[in-house]
Image (cartoon, rainbow, N blue to C red; front, side, top):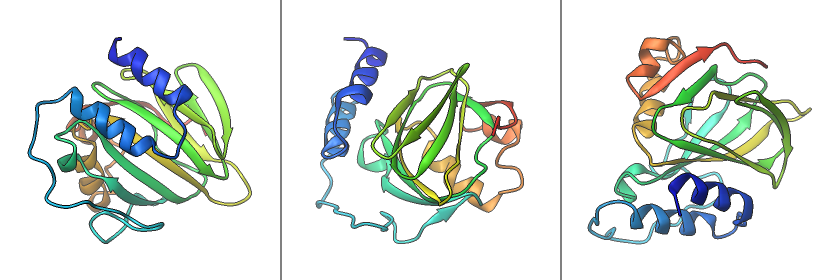
Length: 186
């Protein structure tokens, strides 16, 4: 099965519970072997793997599965307190980006399609397909987002937090294998 077909099948069929373990297993099977982590890392609700949340201004970001723990195969983060607004319309050159709405209502544009998803629903933005999103409900939303393979996405969020004013600039995004397409449609 081709990677893109596989990821679409996962997004459509895999339940949220256990998804993290399933995706990590699949990512590891597609990347060179790495030494096993020295210990099991369990994170509670509202916890970041490194002990502190990150922010780009429109949400708080918690790193759940860092790139280093999957040999670069996967990066998972949680957007909490997602407000209206969001990233500009952009695409990833080498990553699929999977979104799972945990709370609230979130509008997405993926390619030419516009969707409004609610808790329990998900969408996959394939690599090289422009996409953006924004919370649109009366209360902040919460999203789980997975990048496969991880690429430079974890580093993008680390660096963007310290350069919020340029995080959405074309030149800045290009360093992390993304292309700015235009402003958010929301």
